[in-house]
Image (cartoon, rainbow, N blue to C red; front, side):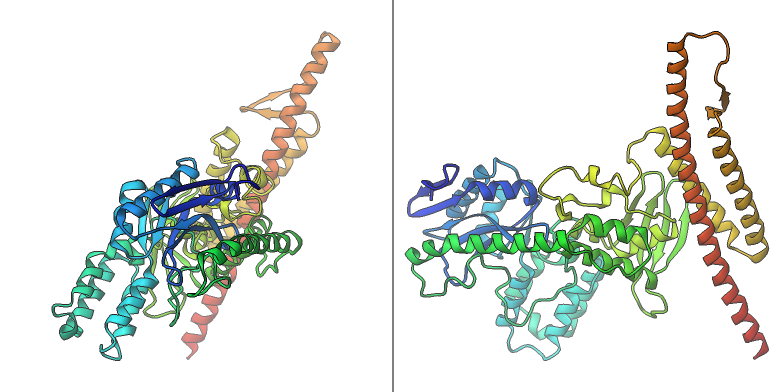
Length: 511
């Protein structure tokens, strides 16, 4: 292998071998935020480190054979792998719940969040508790997957213990997995990135808990010599899957389901798989309205829950309109890199029309392997820096939304607010028209072309300066106009909703 690839890295020690080629290292620079260390059940001596590319497909970062499964062997393997990856730590790593692996990860990757594969824990629990009650498995899965807070999980686990006291009595396995809950129960891990786009999936009835790099190429009877021959075929197959997904993403425009400019923006930026997840969350905002709970002037707190769903869980979103930052209690963005329906619902309530740049994770974009995602966003997003134009943009939108909320409270207030906005829109249009006739408003003063005695060079310089200011003013006016129109549209929606409520109230009185 090294003869064909000079940058191929390998290490051998006491019957163990590790290798990684340059393609592994290059992929790791793009997608090395979360990795999985997998020990094959089919070939127990084969170990691999894999990750997820921008399509959510598996990619390999390194592999090898270990002569034993001691902590020393795993430390050696991880040290060589980290060296091949230029010493860059991943944010998170998922492994099987193996004591010696846990020791090795803590020694070699102390800065990395370590998670045990939840599917492995569940499979082993099923194997060890085959004589449990018929309802135990269902209750166990609900406890693991359907609790949203640590307190909920602890309460649910205690109820599980109380309802199955004979099963839990002196059961070392159940006690051990409870003691290790911070390493495998989702609610303890959701503040860390693991790159899972399907955040609600449950383990299938038959699964070994993770993707095996050589699936379809080997089985329990495959010799090491045969495995090495299949290695390059497996790498080529995975690469081909990625190229196919790249081609489909580049040549196919996804079907949009809403008129939202945010959806169009996401369709242009995200890969197909990532966009479908975003689209799912965006569509769900229609059924998950945001209700304001508090506004302290800096942070606005919302409660988001499914419309008309009695007993549905609510999530709390804290929104900072000046930083365009929304933090949801579900932590989906932190866990998967795709913003959740709850935060998007708040954006909708705040009339945020495009997705802020900090919520577009480059690793899920079409150009994840090249360029800078900020450059791609310029067509769709306001600049995220704190320049005067951005500050004015954010402040104007924030103040306008306060105006909308007050104006929607009753029909008379709504009519007054609408009239005021229309007057404001006319003033902005008049200002724009005035600036186009040679008058540029700058810092509250009016600068006119000096008709006095000036040299030709001075006049040309002044014209360039005024032209630049004119372009800047036109841009601001366009931004104000777009925001005012958006506010007007939002108020029309509020008017329609209020009209429906009034009509319903009248019908109720008649009944």
